Image (cartoon, rainbow, N blue to C red; front, side, top):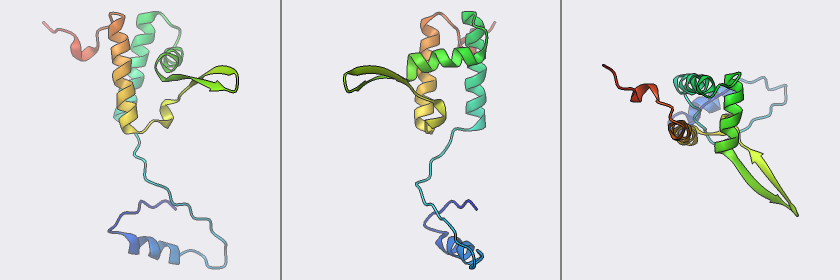
Amino acid sequence: MKFTLNKNNLDGLVGKLKELDQDKLWSVTVKPYKSTRSLDANAYYWNLVAELADYFGLKSKDEMHEVLLYKLLSEEKQIKNLKVITIGSTTKLNVKQFNEYLEKVKEFARGYGFKLGEEEIKD
């Protein structure tokens, strides 16, 4: 069972818990709500990545996605005496972070002369 709790539906949650089989043990986890990016935002991103892959002459959108992750979500970390580069994941970004990442992708693309669909001049 998944339940999104807010200040107005605590009684609903208590009711759901009371419906559980009392003869079984249950594990309940409560964590802060994290909104996820919309399907439209996800589709827009992957369409843009596919266009960029074609523009840069890469084999696939997955390859372009990896390039973008490396360029825009990598971070150098020090582990004892070793410097390592970690690469982030878009799946771990919240909505705000994903939108910021998407803007960085657009900026990266523009920097290489790529014209975004919404920026093209129409006759």
